[in-house]
Length: 468
View 1 (cartoon, rainbow, N blue to C red):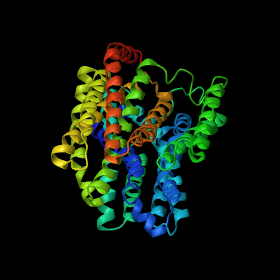
View 2: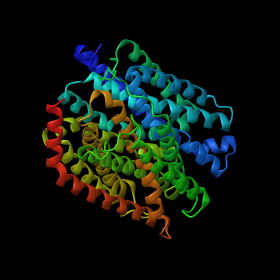
View 3: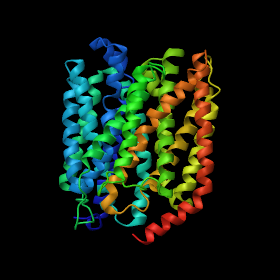
């Protein structure tokens, strides 16, 4: 069954399930942040152990997304979606009952592997669910805000559950959503198989190994900058090794018959605009959540529960803006909406540069927090449409893997750079303000470039739609 043969109500329900699964994949990254000190006390973890728990999900998730996209394009989106959800759900259930630190880390790694299969497969299924270019564009505009909402909800829900019940109950949500997704895969979702039925793409295993190790090691090196200097071997060794592997990966891809990442795929003008926007929006969301969480708990002395509640307006603004994003993208074009979103977020980040030890939440933090939420929600929506423009069905998994990789690398790279900027200042809070200011400048520059490129992006998107 294809998307065009599904009744409209079924398509809407199928989209809702896919969106819930995507949000949960990102939710699962964020859910460990707030309760990490509690977990550390329970398992008697060192700083290095805490870093491993924090990174265990995100490293295989970001590293395997490209290969996950190729698997979806070769074996079908629905098939890989179901297999990935089984791995994701089972590992989440075991993580909830983890008796020890090694078991928890192993299950977080398994969650990341499952998530890397699910995310691009969901995109392949979504492409089959909405084969008409206009309908797919509207779906992607809504889809764009789903991931950032998952991250914020993960932060909020984990704080509430940790304070009221136990951190272990956080994993009940991935288990429940996995069961719902598996039920939908059987009863509701289209197969989403490759449109190129004459020759399925081969599996570029060598490229997959180099890409996975390169992205994972580089990401680990960047994450380690939170506790170690840039010249530390804990940072330099994985970072330089990872970068060398990525360079080798791009060289290998030029000589492979069916490359994991075809040369020029990322550099297509419309797509690169969307990927950069996605990267920045994800980076901004991660930095705001991380920095303000530290500020509220360490400087103002708020509890995890109060900190989680403080981000409720952020979540509400994301939801409200997400509802309006699709019509706005349709009317003004994805590149313009991406630019407007980045500019609004830049203003919000600019307001947060006034952060000081005596800053009050309502007057000093809330206006900037809400503006950032509105801006990145618009940027996510516009960027998601741009990232998937001109993508044929048989490469939907690949495009989904690339888009999710950009989204996952955003917080990792962004946090490493911006927290290094913050570390240049003697006073911690002053450093946070400098980090927000640096992010605001980056947003402004890319917003202006997006405005300059908006006419070309719209023309290219329209041409791609006419040839679909």
